[in-house]
Image (cartoon, rainbow, N blue to C red; front, side, top):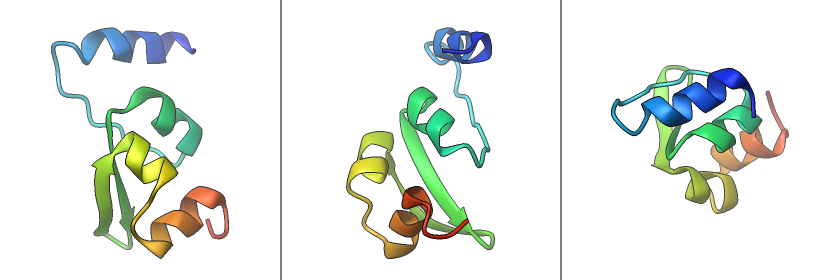
Length: 69
């Protein structure tokens, strides 16, 4: 785990952290909840585990699986 991710892990015990990233691997490592936005709209929001293992929306699944970027 990167040093910044270790720091985020410590800080999230006391603070809310919002991370905006295109790095899906990092998002899956450091977040408890994940939202997927497309063209300024929230497509899906849920626990990180649910989003990455059982997305409800096809657009979310396509993005996570790399079918579109």
